Length: 119
Length: 315
Image 1 (cartoon, each protein chain N blue to C red):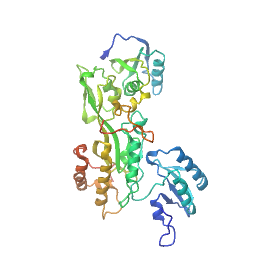
Image 2 (image 1 turned 30 degrees about the vertical axis):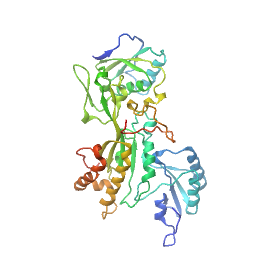
Image 3 (image 1 turned 135 degrees about the horizontal axis):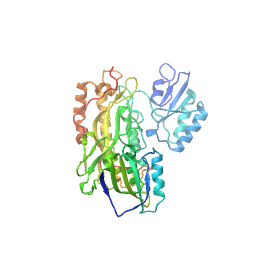
Image 4 (image 1 turned 90 degrees about the vertical axis):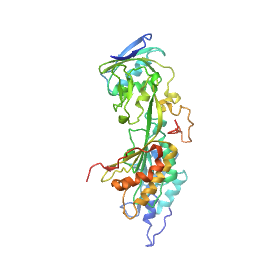
């Protein structure tokens, strides 16, 4: 086992999606988070591989917080605290680390103008 | 391109082809190829294309392999009228033959969560400056991919640009949760057996940014962000994968690199007939010359010990 858990946050729900496949994995995780209040947490169990390659980043992009992780072989236990407003809505999810800060001006074509190499 | 008569008195097919009007096997019928940089077409133009195709075409349009739209079966007599109607909404025709083609691109960072750079804006910039440049030995294709996943197949273009981000580790922020190592598809993050803290293995990293996107506490952050540049790729009968010559190239350097590569290609192909740049660069002596000539332009972004492009399947 490796990782850390913030013990003061107790999950109100546990969800094991290790037997699911994309996109069911993500819809189940989203549904679970949709069923709790902002600030409450869900204990999500994921498997190594595609689930761990995709889900943590997607949770972050949606504005949720992973506040604890425990690894048990190929299974990962994530304590996910539901966020408030979607991070994607304010543009932060458009690039890693928000290279444009979500504040980049919109071009006349509606594109966010990133300045590659000047982040 | 005016629908001029060639010296023989017939249509000037070469001029028509250069202007994106390509002769069909049917007599006096032409396929009108439209310029659609990065595959993005505003709806106003699309509506006009529909009108024109209905009136002058054969009941369909053709989506090209390079994100363009073609209107087949336009008669020679209608070409001027078709061009005029399209021009009213700013829709230009594309090109064919030995010149710089319309660049392709994915959606880039604007709405794709994996996107690292603005491919659409760059495809437009590059189109404005380079589209249609001729006096080349063969066609010259460019593509822009927002990330290393390379959905637009930038690696099999004469010049391909792929977004990349160098991860930067902020040790004090790391909680040793191990998510980054689990999220990395390349095995480029190793966890310390005792502390569970990550160690970055640069030689395995392809700069996709998955670690940055997945880290719950932002211990991985975006460092240098820019374009990985590949040269000499092509599809066709004998496909080649482009060779990596630069990493994290900033937007402002992209036009300079294109200009330099085109200039090199024009000179190096002299007297060699109809040859793509990848075929030239596969020769070791030419590759060495190319790297030497490009070094001042690539500057600090040049890849060390760059290896030449080669045929995917040796002849």
